[in-house]
Length: 334
Ligand code: ADP
Ligand code: MG
Image (cartoon, rainbow, N blue to C red):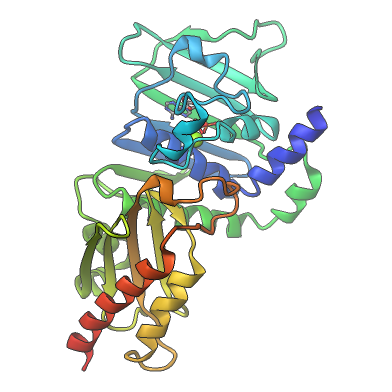
């Protein structure tokens, strides 16, 4: 049983950045306005995420790491209604099977906070002589989750992740993208032991401000903002599109659908096709798209690691975005 849980956990969480993505989304779902992430060795040794969100109630601590338990849906039909894709109740459970997971949390209406450790989905004592029950502690409101020694019990996976620099880069890139999409809140990423953060957004900005902060004023200032609202295809898009080449080896294509970072090969190639008519060969655009679609039009049953998203009316949506982008480009580049 536990071997099976471990294997499926390793499928849900394939690298530190997958775990971090799930945990950031939990912090965002909890309404946090400041989220601070600390990593060590690309997240393999340590992944810590501290937020000032709603916190977790004492009575829920028993089950937060249990598989398929979630505070975010009560009935199966809700799957079709919820906005976030973070619905499965699989993330924390999976992480607890393949790491040492502990958390500290406090809700606003509780006098104190609580600490808890988890092993294989269940509360577990911090020391062999302790009980597994959460322990009261002094705490600010919010949640801090600490994940240590990811894949400690999956040697083959650990071996693949030997290049912690590469994992670190993935973590940094992930945080940058979430920072753009969540420009109104403060996101901070630090390497453990270092004082200067690698990413630090102050909150209260627009996506363009964050792009400028992270990718530089050259990229930020010449971006065209494009919005489309379509009642017919039930979507609402805001995007930032470079009108010159983005100085990089490949297209920077960042897509959030209903606030989850996803991939869409068809949308990306569809836009590259338009750009190729206007940009010099070998140069590449910067594209950030925030797409809100009716939840019933998304295939929510895709596996968490399959970041490719399926949307109803996809071709029509892509067509409309292509048309709008081309209008802009033909004005500014010819
Ligand atoms: P899901 O997000 O699909 O519900 P997770 O395994 O990601 O499942 O999280 C399980 C539950 O733990 C969530 O439903 C939520 O109640 C709680 N939780 C996790 N992280 C946080 C957090 N940072 N703040 C508040 N609650 C959290
Ligand atoms: Mg979640």
